[in-house]
Amino acid sequence: MNEPAYERIASSCERIEIDFSKEEMANLAVIHNMPEQSIEDIATVFSYLEERKNQTIIDTCIKLSRLPKKEPKTFEGFDFSRIHGQDIERLTSLSSLSPLYSRKNLAFIGPQGVGKTHLAMAFGRKCCEAGMKTYFLKATELNQKMTYARKFGKIDSLVKNMVKPSCLIIDEVGRCIFDEYNTNLFFDIVDRRSIKEGPNCMIFTSNKNPKDWENYFIEKDSLLGAMDRFFNDALVFMIKGESYRGRKTETISLQAGNTAPVTGTK
Image (tube, rainbow, N blue to C red; front, side, top):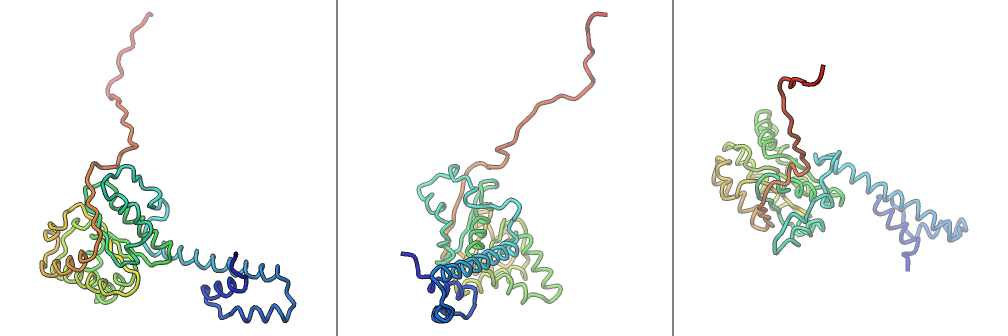
């Protein structure tokens, strides 16, 4: 049986933050002698307003996430047939967002071209579609932001912005070297996110094994502290194999040089 129109109206109003109860709607219907169809029509209007608000939230989350909009990376667009292993279901089930709600971090480790960034972006986009704030940046960009924040006295603002999203994605860890101060900031971000309330997930991608990350973070104690907090409750996907890039490449052999002489009858 469908939910009564009064209940649907009240539910929609609550979600779009309008103070209008089912009792008020019922009283209004009595006062104006509204037929059942009119009440159903009103429920349809409020349902539309709810859907429109939800879509606005999703669009805003995607816009602010720095995830690609023109060619979005999605789970539907990922070729899972290329990935094999006994626990492949742990990978294919990521679209349920269970790590976000169970507050588990994610790490995708492996060589270039096996889909690490695609998977991280797909998870981030799914978070946006659930109305969760997401932020994507490369490790080099984070390093630059830290140096800029130090120079212009905006460290508190930077850390706050990195802690605020429900899902924070740091792509390509191991592409740059974090100096001592920036390593300390890195620890601060991971530490504060580890105690952040509500749905929370941090994602790292890297073609470097985590045991080798000490080569890219100068302050070893801060790095170890950050890694302890990150990997304390995390799902780490170690992906091996050949690069998936260039699968659509066509190689066309041609030769350049002087035109060969043309022979023939006079």
